[in-house]
Amino acid sequence: MIKKTLFKNMYSFTVVYAPVGRGYQVTVPLLPGLVTYGRNFEEAKDMAKDAINCHLESLRKDREPIPVEQSLLQERLTVSLV
Image 1 (cartoon, rainbow, N blue to C red):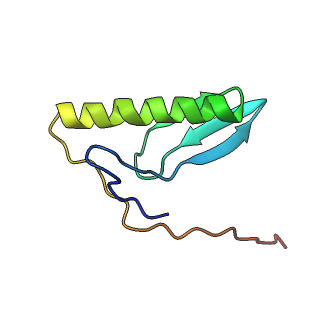
Image 2: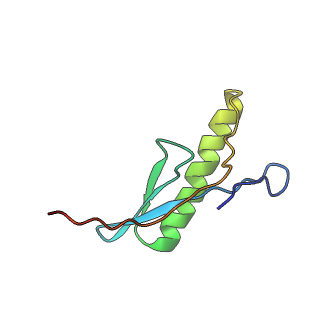
């Protein structure tokens, strides 16, 4: 997924939803350290949006640049142990 500014002050980020227990842990590869959780997929998605907004507001407040995801290459690898 390519991250582009959609409209002024609107951003798009790749998020990863990993099943954990009865819910989902959410991470954002471009924003290291950003981790949140939801008891179901919709809650996890809402929590991710909130966490991303808070992170971006913090970057803006500290006058740090908002990272831009140029491109993301993703695949699933299967390996076997001998």
